[in-house]
Length: 172
Image (cartoon, rainbow, N blue to C red):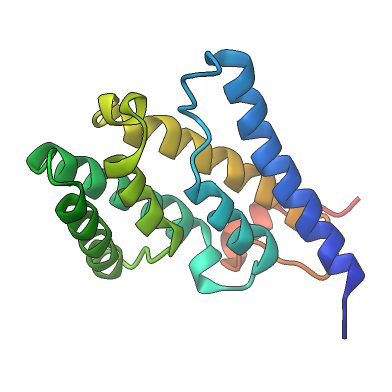
């Protein structure tokens, strides 16, 4: 059965989340910088707006997975800057293991680690600032939009943690 209402909420959330991040990038950064909007945010949007009940879509996983992976990715790039194939394989593999260890598994985190190694020179030049901007700032924006949009739909509860959920949930 196709749930058109669910698809509408998914669309609204992902459009708003990526749209806000993209708008901020366009407004506050030179078009050639491209440092706020990274590809892994698209994959995160699939989870936090399309699979809101997934454990992998919850705030701890969203934020923690990206942060852990960004730190791993940047660290690997500093250690092995010239061997992209090796740095990429290590960054993704180590980020997966570190997300498992920290219980923050979020599949797009692997892409965040990879981007730290294969991204533009501007991304690589950020070093550990990459963890703050674009990663942390971007995922916080996506999370705020996910909480606001997903909880407007009567059939969605995001995040699943009911205590935190109660702080954000408002019915008008």
